[in-house]
Length: 311
Image (cartoon, rainbow, N blue to C red; front, side, top):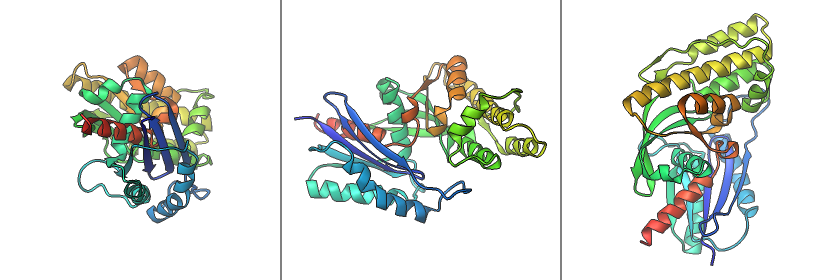
């Protein structure tokens, strides 16, 4: 009988469910962005929770039907106290009901732990979950450089750097809004940047692997006011973000020499980011579809937890 495991993730902007077959390595993932009103750059938690509640059953029903051995779900943004967000209640409540009804194990994890597992699996580096490494979590609301170590079936992530104010994803979306692009703006900003005639950048100051993006945002707004072309602005913003991330990575590797660097999160799907970080820092990336919020990592961690319990 196939060993199939269900993972669920209801994060800020995506409803997602996935099934992982441990024996064949086959997988199926169903995810979709939440609807954000035109002109907005985010959702209230109450609106996100409502949309997850309406849509989650559709994502689960679209998966291949059959018996599953265990169910896992992201219940919070990060492991540890003080990271509660209401949107995760939609996934947790349905996962608990399903696990109780089916009399199968229930395994919680954090959204960030799921990101790390999905990136490691997609990159063909599942070995990283059993050894220390560095991870960039680059998403709509997070720009954190993490020192990650094994913690049973899960991983323990300690923030050692990243932004001290707005995230890379927030800056990209604010750039998109300034240019009249749809939310989320990552793909459009990436595509426009490739058409830039003038490829300038702003030097982000980095200290102890940490930096601020507020100065870069001010520069972006000034360029827009001056009538700079959208393509040049997009290149300017992306190249500057990447310079800050690269510099922080090199500083962290001075403290943790030789550790592999894994990049996860929606911003990590940016093509320029992937090119620069691979070339200059030897970073490993997930496939773009597994850089975004999804339940695949949660399903993999569920398989790991179930497998360890049987040993």
